[in-house]
Length: 426
Image (cartoon, rainbow, N blue to C red):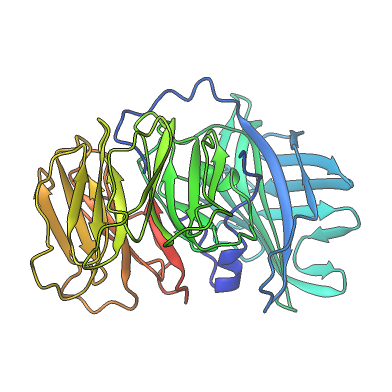
């Protein structure tokens, strides 16, 4: 199920995240999410064409469900001004997750969003601009036996002729989706887009974040209810139930941070720099590093074993293991294109390497299911994500293209003109 598939690249950048931060997906079994507090929050943002400065929300709050009739969403919150949202399907139809509703949307129906004296309900007028479309993508919806909506999550867009976009993400009483059954793409500006049943995290994160660094990695907590982002200057940003244990933002580094890996219990993490320096936080134990050692090529990634310890990989395919077995490398082999990342098997008994042309190299128990090494790509591959059982994987390219091998394809951002995807995670 594609979560955000709007045509314009600007619109894609403005439909990814809403929320506030609270301060490598592990191979351990997902924990129960029954004790998690259901998420209820809504944010509205404005975006204008050509703007390079992210905006702050002009409305935000905790939604209240006020559905007065079955099979229709009606929700409000008050902050500065009353803001409300109504989503209704066409007569005789039932609201369903994964559908797009509103003016010009495939599923039809009506969408109305108001905020103070402004409103979105096309065709109409919004502050002097003619509204050309008001649509809502419904990620989650649950109803009681009478058909009254009890929980929902939706992304709402109001487009006007000037090219401006009013965007909201609206979550009421939603709980975490099952982790590791879909995937997220993260852009180097921190925007996150989910595919498959991985949509919950889109409603945890900050919609647009003016980070002072390029985001290079993302990792999801073991229960799938939060995530970390890490930047090349060492900043660590936490969302949902991901905990902050420290970072290096503001501290002079010899080389930029290029990778991040979380411990299997989610109570610690490692950062790795391009010179092989390791920084450990929380219950992540320092097992050694390559900092201060001459490297033939820079380090480009790190992956952790569920039992502790970690591997680092260099762009020439060289592998450096600390507290974990060594299964082999490509360090002595001439490569067509440089290695850009690696991932461990769920049991920690092998690993995959991936090159920028999509070539895949397997070691130990990691199995080969295909690659794009012989295919002409529009943009280079940036990462590899194994499936939860290790019997397949996805590759992600910097333009948001996703290539699935023995795993279901759930959508991508390919063909949208993007070039800033930095990682894939689940």
